Image (cartoon, rainbow, N blue to C red; front, side):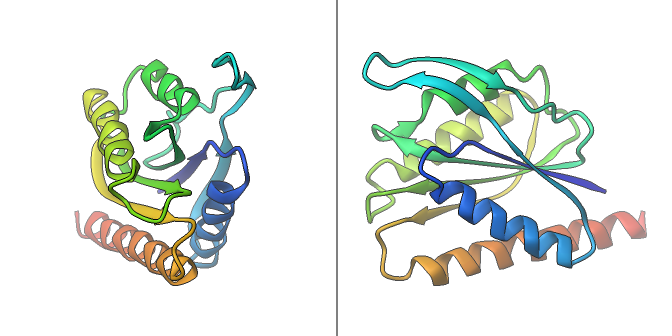
Length: 163
């Protein structure tokens, strides 16, 4: 079972969570890759060009990680996801980071938006989470999110061994 963590991060916050997840999954003996979506971007003019587009075909499980921008999914990750031809037969976990302390300040909407795009591409959503960067419990929440993903993936592995 191959796992791909596809992350778009500007400030490094989302990447830091994705990197911790990568290390944990690797320690568990998984075949895992951490791949970044990269873009040249002018935020003032809201113009961008995606310069690195990870191919997800080879992965059985994909973790998409991105951040909230202006109370919704940032345009780079949105365009990247929309350009994926299909996610059929892929188990997908989505997590979002956001600067604001409450999930209702864009986090919930961004998560729904990301999940909707993945479902339109026939992806099987197996879980999701939000990390609020300014929350005092951020480190604890990050640890909990990683534990949740790792345990869900263990469950999928055990299920596949039985079948």
